[in-house]
Amino acid sequence: MNNTGTARASKLSTVLRVTSGNFLEMFDFFLYGFYATYIAQTFFPSNDEYASLILTFATFGAGFLMRPLGAIILGSYIDRIGRRKGLILTLGIMACGTILIAFVPGYATIGIFAPVLVLTGRLLQGFSAGVELGGVSVYLSEMATPGHKGFYVSWQSASQQVAIMFSAVLGYLLSQSLLPAQISAWGWRIPFFIGCMIVPVIFVIRRSLQETEEFLARKHHPMFKEVVRSMVSNWLVVGAGMMLVVMTTVSFYLITVYTPTFGKSILKLSSADSLLVTFCVGMSNFIWLPVMGALSDRIGRWPVLVTFTVLPILTAYPMLSWLVANISFENMLVTELWLSFIYASYNGAAVVALTEMMPPHVRTVGFSLAYSLATAIFGGFTPMISTWLIEVTGDKAAPGYWMSFAALCGLTATLILYRRGGRLGSAAQSANPQAS
Image (cartoon, rainbow, N blue to C red):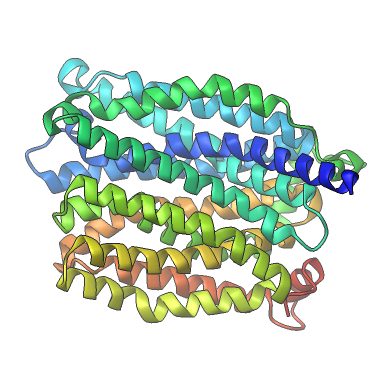
């Protein structure tokens, strides 16, 4: 009994240590989206609020274009050198990007160098994040106890929700403590400074990680050329995995990063109300992710994935239409919590499914490439696309169409990956025999 208790405590400690770094990297990464309107005024000034916001979100999305490159380069490094060393490296790169954004003077002070340096910071963050989620997910899947991979891997996404809640709390405290003019001038930088101060602590924590037994037991660790060849030969699996992730990444950035801007700029609610909704969304995600990850361990990935792709196809736009016709804090909260339930339920099964479908010797790079491609092409530009859709259609509920499209991608990928008799279906079934 004591041995069992000690083993569980050791597993819990490992989960906390590996996800603590993921929390920090995602906290730094999401701050840009949370404070987009203030960053727009500081680094991308314009007489046209729409144009300024579009430039800001374009820079936000540009960071995602670096993700595939980070996935291949850093992912191959992690598959060759080890999970632990790779996760330490990604943390250092992300910290450099955050420091740049936190300390760069505004456009009024240094002119064109301001947006250029901010863009550089975003590119560094994107390069690092391209493999961070994959590295953490693979680490958790390899240290999970048999039959509980879904539950363990779900804590990668759950740690992101802690970052969302922490960011929202900081934003709420700032809105209550400072005047809007003060937040616009310098207050928005405070959360970035806090992220910089946390870096050394998380670095020490992550250095204490042990390498996974599965990686140590592997006889051959592929070189970069072998990784590239494997990705080419497994392009169909990577492509289907990318489609699977589209639903995850689009819905996530829609209900978290875009929510403060949507509430403030589109629905004209207060910043405090929008941030409070964001906090509640993070809490909802945090609760549902491990619950649905554990459910997918019991009933299989396929039923969960199908159910929670059909639901957003049917309800995403109607829910947002109802919200914009009846704008209030309470209605925004109800709408966002429903979309949160859909996202977290789908993600609880999707992320672990992605680790299971990739060849073990290139699991990190395969996962990271599929995830980063989906994020770079679709998810990362969700705030910009949502803003654009509203502008060109005149329909404030138009982002619902984008989420429904993402859900259709997820449903198609699920049917391809888990179809009986097909090559991809056989690989998925053998990796997860419960998913039938």
